[in-house]
Length: 486
Image (cartoon, rainbow, N blue to C red; front, side, top):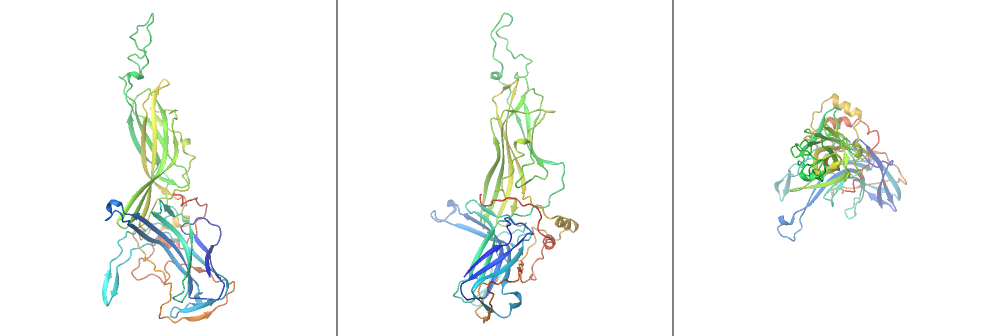
């Protein structure tokens, strides 16, 4: 016996509102008795941190904390068919040798389904005791992207799982998993405007030193030896105020950059005082710094990773001044997109990712074609949000704009879905049903987040989720994303 999953189509990347469909293919070499076949769509956020040696009770102990959150769970029973299912009576089915295909289909939701585990009552030896609720932090946000980060400290994976349940307790259930990448839809963007967010830093160059002045010329018939080429009215004498500049790095407001696209960045250098000196750029480096916060129960760690977009040195580029403002040529970075290993900004229960853009500018100055030795390197840091570049459907944006949401995506909760038991209860009496679907095909089964419906104490879905149920998948090109290269 073997079970495998085969997807329909050749789609390599999935996002919110997409349908994922395929077949669970069961291959048998002899008659087999089974109770059911289930297919699940799951998303899992797993963090794994090691306790620092100084915090351990003994230096040779290796303590690892692991925290797992189920951010997505949908399950369907693809066999037996719905007309053969009997909720009040357990049944078993005999399948003959051959290949049996069981189609399925799921639709990705907007938000994750991770919720708080409530306190439960446990009965032991006739005594009832209340088990404490989970103290793990839970948030409800848009589904995060697939992520494999730094020695498996943080893993977010999405997968399909098919399970063949066999009624005999001594027979193992057959399972298979199929991983696939997920890349979320970006949030709605604000209307275009002319505002800019910026980081700014000021710098004052040192005043010219005597070593920077012209050397003493030898005496001649009409000039004395004590007279310098730089007279008292020379702009390079120490009496001249030192050059002051202001460096700006600017992005559209709000500061949003997009995966697989170049930065909409402007870099300005402004003279703050009257000076005849010319400003030169010697160095330019632009990098995207990712801040990944990983939690595992009481442990927490922040990791920084840097992606250098461009780095140039020994440039000697003269900056053209216009009303004391000099704008650095955008051609140095406008054709350099973000690499396809950059994930969008996200936050989930135990993992979050934020970004900053660091711009390093190295400036010097001179006069009359002569460069002074002073070089200043200034770093400007700007917090940014990275969007996936997959815009939500227009129908969803119009629906959300027409009717306000009654529940906040960050506070509303949906009860966790408990997967069905993999074995039949011991008190159930199996009722055998023999089927002969040689190379059979079965009706398609559609997955639901809550197969048994909402409980009385469950919060209803948010407005965005309710509206999204009636909207089709996103149309248009998808982004490239390599999640295993971090």
